[in-house]
Amino acid sequence: MKPPLVFQANDGARRVLVPGVTAEFFVGLDLGQAHDSTALCVVEKRSMPGEPDRFGIRHLQTWLGEPYPALVDHVVRILARPPLDLARSLIIDRTGVGRPVYDLFRQAGLDCGVVGVTITAADQAHSDGGAHWVPKRDLVSVAQVLLMERRLEIATGLPDAERLATELRDFRVSISAAGHDSYSAREGKHDDILLASCLALWGAQRNLGRFEAW
Image (cartoon, rainbow, N blue to C red; front, side, top):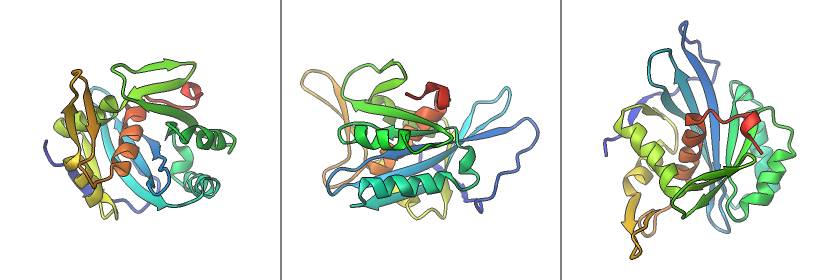
């Protein structure tokens, strides 16, 4: 896999784009359980007529041991600051403990869409009334394809940029005895930032927003 492209992080102000270029923000949140970290990733999607979309990872953040109500408050405050006050959607890992936390975000009155994704080991993704069940394989392949096509950039200067690059390198595919592929980090490694990034990228590719939320 080719290494990710990098560029200088902006100063947090609203981006000034040339005529014809639009930018939207998508936020992915991978919820940790017990002693695992919760990770947040902000992806900027840039679109220009006649050109393939490009994606930039603009912000990474993690919390360890944070109570879920406090975590919701932190994320709500992040999404209230420009330019994320115009974010299109927050895509949340709704697997396991994620369902009640997802409900807390639904009740928080966010201006963006709140999209719940249950990560599965199934072979195919499906949706029902705005709820999404997505194989981990599909989420990871989003980042892999964008990297290979050189359409994914990671802002330099982010505290966890190197960690994300490491998680991308450490992630591997194994084939089960039944012939199904499974994705996991190497032993002793974590993939929370990677999954948060993949959730944001998956939502950005599908333009998920308020009307696609559940």
